[in-house]
Length: 479
Image (tube, rainbow, N blue to C red; front, side):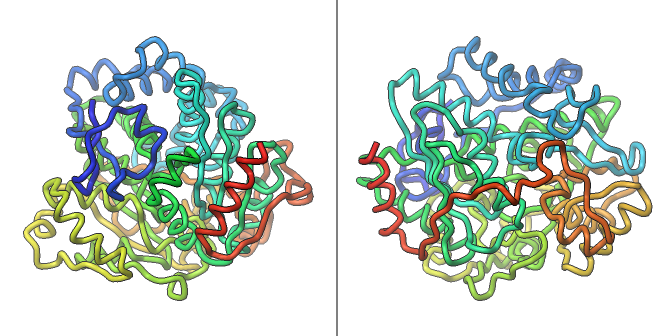
């Protein structure tokens, strides 16, 4: 399996090479040269597998430069009830991603937030940590991970990489924009290989710094800069697995279809669903849900992709989706325009210059229906109403991002098709809004009662790529 850049000007690479690299040298994102196809016989054989077994079956289609026995051992080590039992302490913990039915057989939550940081990002990040350690050990190398987070990626990456040899993590986050719980999860870590940097701006500003550093190829090579954001292909590949697992949990046989509703800011989570569907998973619809930052919803409604600047990006009560430049969207557009790297370069030259692009009159957008997408958005008042509705009608407390997905699911689902809303986080991570909606605090997993009171370690900096590069240099050279 070889990987090519969405911008068409980088040589094909192996999985292990792109695992450590992040962005392609031409500024694009990596995708397989062709998506592996899944047959009915594959689906029949996979239906009864455990999560770890299913992860190996799927990931082995994408990874052929790690020996099969080693890849299987990595999957077995990653996907255990111990790693994903932080919330559940019952038999369902072994399912890793159980379905919680709100309306049996019709509408459910695919539980993705039972891992150590209580967010769906753990599903891929724990695998990434084990893959990084394995490849670095084999190569005798070290890596300095530079990432940006709007809330959950950062803590998931840090918990996956803490204590790993050969790895340092430099994580950028928007100063004062995350929930108190999210900040505490990250900033309270005292591990010597974890470095938190809060930038005076929005997530998009932090992400721009990461891209600027990644595009300084000499610096990136000298200081071994790697990526854990969803620009890293391994993150997307790992997320494909739970679409298959959710499908099997929601159906009785492989003649049925399922709709997935995905709260989305950076397009990584739903991009994995798009790839699962392209591989042959029987997906009726991929329903994208945004918050007030509705850049992606606007595209699927109008054909215009118009990223906002920092001043136009709303700070909302579903802060992990306060994103107005969706990095992974480039992967989908690459498929949409027939995998034409020159066309993607033309479109993103406008985006990278602070502009927009309009595909509304194009034959590609006219044919977008074949990809199964629908979209909607939610605002603060609707978010609160959905949290109350879930509590009242289903005796279930959902976090603010899952509420965005559930609100759009109520509007757009087909009652004849089982619909799974991808749960994004535990409600405890967004306590203030849950209290506003329900008048009571959400339950917290054991051991996290006073996490906000722990000592915190973070450096606040301006949005300045050169200053952040200098900080990394000082840290690396200090040993």
